[in-house]
Amino acid sequence: MFRKIFFKEENNVELIRNIFKSLKKNKKRKQVIILDVCALKTQKAMDIIEESSKVVLLLGTISELDDNKKIVDPQGKNIRTILKASREDSESKKYLCVSGYEKYPYVDDNIIEYCRKNREVTILTCDNGLCNKAKAFGISYIFAEDEPKIYENNTKNLNSTQANSINPKSELTTNKETEKEQSLLEVELSENSIKILTKKGWYVHYVVVREKRIINSRNYQAGDELYIYKYNNKTKNMSILVYDIEKTNHGYMAYKRKEYPIRYINDIYVLNLPEELEEDIRKFYLQNKDY
Image 1 (cartoon, rainbow, N blue to C red):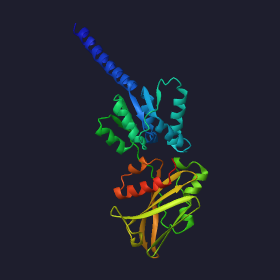
Image 2 (cartoon, one colour; image 1 turned 45 degrees about the vertical axis):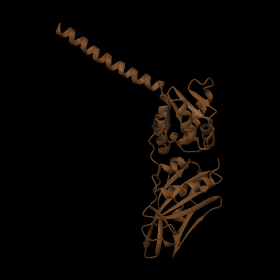
Image 3 (cartoon, rainbow, N blue to C red; image 1 turned 30 degrees about the vertical axis):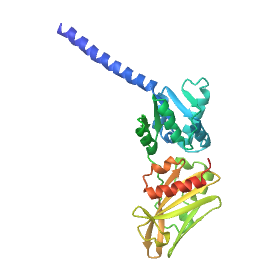
Image 4 (tube, rainbow, N blue to C red; image 1 turned 135 degrees about the vertical axis):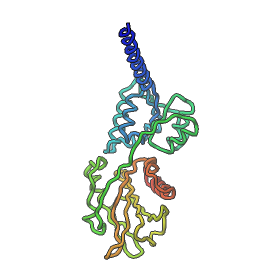
């Protein structure tokens, strides 16, 4: 008798586990998300999309996807995957292409507007600002974790063309022409002067940062950081390069420490830079980026 009861209890426990697994699986299947393009930088976003029952694409989002479909990094591949999947879903069983939400110039605000009217939708993004806007309106969101890509280069002497022609291998620069263009940059430091040399087609701006504040570049000294923003009008590539300024026996020199690719304006804000620097980069981006 004891064995028979124990066996039934054991079966009940297993049954309960299976029920919870089934409920969890069904919850994932029923999830409706609205896509923010920047989320496609992560594999996590692609996994969430795969598990979701519906994916909402606003017209502004579709335009962003189309504008960036030729990017050669993994994000570009994910964009092309989503565009193809949506096109093949002719009956809109999973991918819903929605018009009528073009009130604001910034797509994030249109996403918020849609979600305020459709409360069952969850925003999929990796933009901190959009998440906080969603919180303000009680809208659910999923933050797809994405560490910014950092390209390390420990070459100290940036006064030589050879040093600056070193281009770290990355998924972002698989196109040979892009690799060549991204390496064509020289930094020359002289007394009270910083000179950036680059090839035709690049738009360059720089600032010197000390203790998280932008200072007069003529007053640079050892320990300061040099931020260079560069944008190529042909390839539509933008990067933020970070250099450390050091004092040597031969004067001041700068060496490249990091490089951040900027594909969307949201990429600026995930770098956790000082607010003043974020605003300066944003202005440069908007002045040069073609929409």
